[in-house]
Image (cartoon, rainbow, N blue to C red):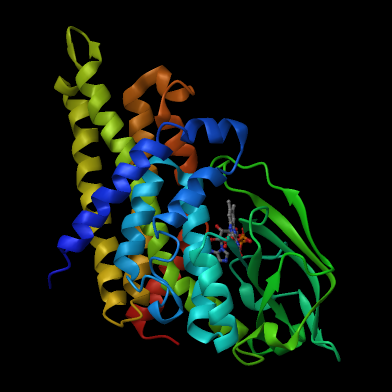
Length: 380
Ligand SMILES: Cc1cc2nc3c(=O)[nH]c(=O)nc-3n(C[C@H](O)[C@H](O)[C@H](O)COP(=O)(O)OP(=O)(O)OC[C@H]3O[C@@H](n4cnc5c(N)ncnc54)[C@H](O)[C@@H]3O)c2cc1C
């Protein structure tokens, strides 16, 4: 099996890297301090075609597939974890349900808007639980005007920047997964409001808020797929998008690793460079190996998806491994930097903070292990 990048993908990676090095890397620490979303860079990113990259060509998208989306996500994450999550949510998981199950009207409206740089959110998690999504509390009911939504979603990425988003609600919690439906909701819909902004550990330039639906009435045309298909749409979207979080973790880990190698060669202790000390060499060797495994798992899963496979197990393996390996690599990078690694003088402390959430969102590590085991054991 050969899942190396082809020439187009190699060229694409170097173009994104050039953009990231000139516009993202020099400013990313600043955006974090200010907790500010970099709209100016986002608009440029859209102009370069990065927002439309993986969206279907017949609606104005780039039709480039998962490998390209992972390349873009990895390169963005190398400089800014926050910008990369805004990207993978808006141009990935939030659009997947619309692309796979949306009506013609939804596709021809939302795909061009996302391509032009409008931002989308994906609202599944509720205060009572994120892993056990079938126990959803947020309700909807059919009215003469459409569907009335009532409830609260929590930890929603992009909520402050988004102009629309995909929201999941149940007709009746006692129906379990069969009661859940998916809706696309415009930001200016009466009854929609943005609640508390979370005070997070990292990825500060990306907003994460509660969103509140209070007698929020959307038209009938807002329903995605059929009533009762919502949970399938949510899980398919996450299955398809999960590998992007692996790519994000890979990008953050690469930066931490590169910084660790550079610093180990520059910094001296006991009359020699840190890189001459075996304890440090082992940290570098383990990190290089884990980075390589993360890369292979991530791009293998993307390669399979681009060939029409669901790759549920492979994506879960990639996300599980790459996110946990990124944790170990960031931890070592801080260690190699010593005291300065624990200060904002060094970017490795930011990478360590940005990495942590990759083990939690779009399914925790425990949920990935569960998904892998179910596939291995052939369980429904
Ligand atoms: C910065 C950030 C951004 C986010 N963005 C979004 C977003 O855009 N959209 C969205 O919908 N959500 C988003 N989330 C929510 C995120 O997906 C959830 O936090 C995550 O799915 C975990 O859910 P929870 O926090 O409710 O934890 P819980 O589900 O309460 O889990 C708590 C712990 O118990 C473990 N656990 C639970 N069930 C089991 C089990 N059966 N077996 C073993 N262990 C188990 C979990 O793995 C975890 O360790 C975001 C969260 C954060 C922090």
